[in-house]
Length: 123
Image (cartoon, rainbow, N blue to C red; front, side, top):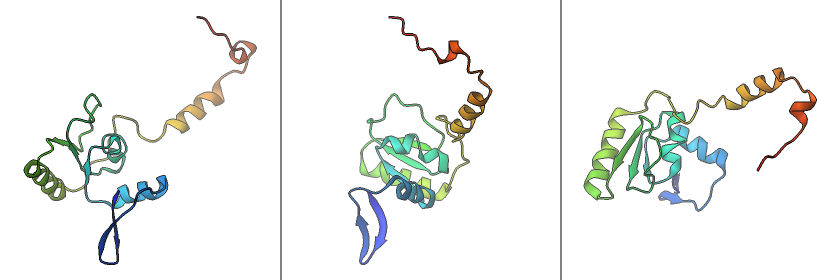
């Protein structure tokens, strides 16, 4: 993961905590690479993504994603487009971050009768 500015320019981190990574997504101008994070999490920040290559084929895309071939010219052009356009409206096909709240509300209304509490596997 490259990205935090240190003495002499950019430095590379082999691993960062999830909290730190999410804070970087919140502050970044563009995410370029072939990580599922660009496809899934980045949209929750409206962060433009340049998805390089076909590693993420088959995953549903958000509107913030620009797919390009792993070729310098198209990658550079896509990064420039992303920087010009800036952040996108926050919309994520993978959810809006409120699943836990909805699940808790549903569980609060679920009657805890014996039939709900009894586990039954049918094979």
